[in-house]
Image (cartoon, rainbow, N blue to C red; front, side, top):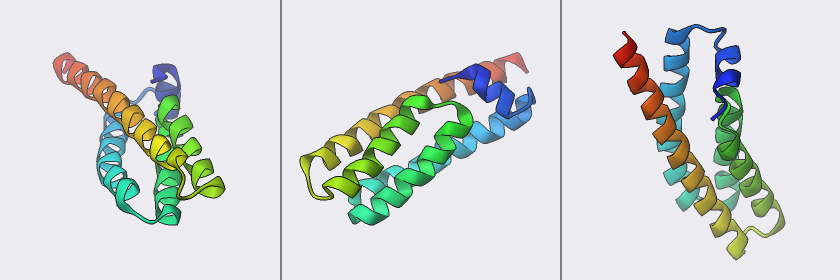
Length: 111
């Protein structure tokens, strides 16, 4: 995750940063199951939502994976590429949420 980008987007406001990161985690928890079980068009729309959120916090791997999923739906909505894209997005979100949890833990410890 790009912490410099996150700091710029939150104007250095640590409370705002915490809120934005918590929102991303909640949103990812809602969107990932939807993506995994929805029709391809709905999965693409949910991935697009995560794409924007990921870009906002500097979670570039998540953004790239969400964009890849959108393209997979557009090109081959029932292809193995779609399942691969869903799995990659899940892995990217898991990684980002792990980093976010650590970041939020650091902030709790810092006061």
